[in-house]
Structures are given as structure tokens and as C-alpha cells.
Amino acid sequence: MARFLTHQMGQSSSTTNYSINRFLTPATISSESSDLADEINIGPLRDHTEDIPDDCLAYIFQLLKAGDRKSSSLVCKRWLRVDAQSRRRLSLIAQSEIISYVPTIFTRFDSVAKLSLRCGRKSVSLNDDALLMISIRCENLTRLKLRGCRELTELGMANFAKNCKNLTKFSCGSCNFGVEGINWMLKYCTDLEELTIKRLRSANNGNELVIVPGAAALSLKSICLKELVNGQCFEPLVVECKKLKTLKVIRCLGDWDSVLVKIGNGNVILSDVHLERLQVSDIGLGAIAKCVNIDSLHIVRNPDCSNLGLVSVAENCRKLRKLHIDGWNINRIGDEGLIAVAKQCPELQELVLICVHVTHLSMAAIAVNCQRLERLALCGIGAIGDAEIACIAAKCVELKKLCIKGCAISDTAIEALAWGCPNLVKVKIKKCRGVSSEVVNWLLRRKGSLVVSFDAAESEGLDASGSDVGGQESGVEFPVMGDQVVVGDGPSVSIGRLALLRAKLGFFASRNLVPCAFNKSSNHGDSSSSNL
Image (cartoon, rainbow, N blue to C red; front, top):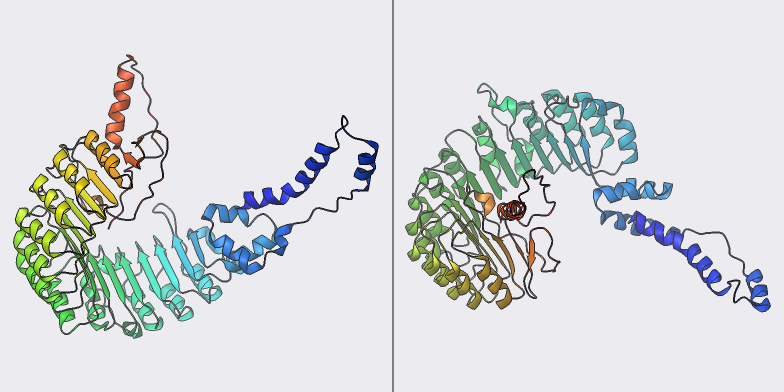
């Protein structure tokens, strides 16, 4: 933006000079035109951006990327001032050296509401004194994220909480202050709504105090606990938060059935639950089933959860819209549970099944009964074949996004998609050896507006991140470059990086070139996957 505006600002005088030189050249100039040129008075150059109000300029800055915004702020003193006054979000490398720059930084950026402080593993982080200075100068702070700030103690967190009582979102990871530091935040930050605790090192000591809910228990709506050895010390907080809507517990040791039983008694607020790699069984799922307003449930790699618990959830949580299950190939969740979901949860819109033991029976029930299904991911399920995909294509008329990864399908299944699913906008096919690029190209010609991501590489490990039926991609066409292949008038097909590497190897081998050097391509169709 800065380059664009600077270019426009400089174009005014250059255009005028060009116009004069164009019509007043020595070969065509006359005496009359010479007199006219002498009368032309070109005034001093003027910055037309001065007419843009500060509010409009601040809005333009908000539309820029971080690097462009930094460059734009250096154009002139006014832009530097407007950028500083309008910046609400700031991310800093929180090393110990920052303490000498804190006054300068927060004198300039005095309106920051969202602050992120990160420090690498090999660096010494900022200490309590630096955090205290920040809390005094950031009166409008509402969100704070701490990552790797290992020099902060419980005393530093207490002083910060006393000065930043308007905090609504707090997230910390890989910090050394323990449960007492969290208790100070819960005591003074009475408006706290979101709390995320990840790898809180001192909380791993079994002798630590338990979490005291504090005043924040009345306002908390979201709690995320991740990778905590002694995560059950948060039980009083989780149970006492009567406005809790979202609960995520990921890789935390301990028996979580008892916690879920206490939460589920008469809870009508909880709507989003994520349980991953926990010691939780069907008892815990039965407790969740008592929260009748659950609309999003993730059951990821919990070996003690079975069809019995899923049936209980399906029978009681009729408003369920999103269901993610990673069965971890232990075959405890299968047709019985999914048939119950299909019959009892007609509002289901998003379903992700990873390494779950399902057959044609459950898939047919889902296709027939879940008429509102819009997003479906099937990953690492050997029983999913052409017949199951054909059933989905014929019955799931509202389906918009489909991901098939590591399943035993062939070209026949892809052909079925061409004649069904009239609302389909995106298909992702990964690690399905029976599918050829020819049929994918034919599908694109058949449905020109469809976005297809195709990876013909060999099978690799499957996880939840591979089920990408996420954000809609643009169908803008590009020439053939790197691993992008354009077919007809349709959108592009992304070929996997392994297939691209093989093609390059074959290309060089045909010329008997032994020393080959390959540069990583900067644009891979499947270089990253986004979750649903």
C-alpha cells in the first residue's frame, strides 16, 4: 500500500511534465505554443493523502499485512502516528533485552488491546519487572498470550492481574509459573471469558495447590487444557463455571470420567466438547449426553470410548451438528454407534471419521437420514469403497465438501460424484491408490466449478489433520507451473509432492544426469492441511 500510494503521489508531477514534453517537443513547437508553455505555472508538489482523514487512513492500515503495515508507517510522520494510534494488536519477541525498550514501545503503541509475548527455547525471556511495566502502560489490554516466558513467576502474574482487570482472554504455554499464578488471574480478571493453558510446567508437580475458581468463574465461557500432567487440579474451575460453552481437554493425565460426571448434571449451556487422548470411557460420554445442547463433539483417540457411549450421546443430544471421531484403529466405535447418530441426529452438518470400523450399513444410514450433511471426511477406513461413495453421491444432496483419504476406492467412485451431490464445491482425494489422474481430469471437465485436490502419493500415517474439507478455495485458473495442472476450463488439480518429485527424477534420469539438485517448490497444492 505504501508503495502504491507513494507511486500515486509522485505520479502527479511526472504526468504533468510528460504532458508538457509531449506537446512541446522541439520538432513541433511553435511560437504560440512556446509562449503558452512560458505562461504555465506548475505549483509546488502536494501530498494528496493529506486530504484523507485519520480514521480512513487507519482503516486502510488495518487491511494491510504485517510487513506492509510496518513499511507504510515509515512513509512520513503522520502515517507513523496514525499507525501507532490505530494499532490494536501487537506481537513481540519477549526476550530479556526487551525491558529497556518497553517504555518506548508502549509510549508509541498506547492503544494495544491484544498482546502476544513469545520467547524461544534457547533464549532468556522477559521477567516480572518487564511484565509489570507492560501492565502499567497497557490500560486497554483485553487479550494476552504468553509463550515460552519461563522467567515469569507467580508474583509477576499477580502484579499483572491487578493492573489488567479488563482481560477477557488469557492463553499461556510453556511457562514456569504454576497454579498459583493462574489463581491470581482468576481472582482479579473478573471479565475473563476464554482461558487456554498449555504445558504449564510447575502444574506438573503433584504437591501444587488446586485451582480456585475465583471471580472469573462467573464469566468464563471457554476452557482449553492441553498437555498437563496434573490437569485435574483444574477440576474445581471446570465444574464451577456455570456459563461454560466450550471445553477442550487434550493429552492431560488422570481420570476424567468423574470430572465429566460433575459437569453433566443439569448443564444446559455446554455446547462444544473436545476430548483427545484422555483416560475417559463410556461413563464420561454418558455424562456428556446429559448436556442436551451439545452441538459439536470431538472424540479423538480415546481407547476406552465405544459404541455404547456414542449411542448415549446420539439419543440425548439431538441438536448435534458436528461430530469428529478418530477411532485409532481399535474397532470400538463402528456401525452401531454411527447408525444411532444417523437416526437420532438429523441436524448433523459435519462428520469426520478417521480409522473407524464402519461398513456400508452405517454409511447408508447416514446418507439417508442426515439430509443436512454438508461436510464429510473419511480417512483410513478400509471398508469404504466404491459402493459407499456411490451411496453418498446419490443421497447426500446438500454435501458441499468431501475428503477421502486412504480408502479403498477406484475411478468408479469418482465417476459417481460426477452424477450426484449437486451442491459439491470441493473434493479432496489423498492416498487412494485406485484413483487415477485421468478420472480426476474427467471429473473437472464434467463439473467445471468444482475444486479438486488430488494426491496420488503412497500411503502415509493418517491423523486428524489430514481430513481437510475446510475453507472453500478459489477456482481461479493459473498456467501450468510447478505442481499445478489446469484441465480444460476448470480449476486446478494439486498433484502430491512425492508424485512431483518422481516426475522430476524421471526427467533427469532420462538424460543420464547423475548430479541432480532440487530446490523445494514454494507452492505445493497439499503443503498444508486445515482442519474442519
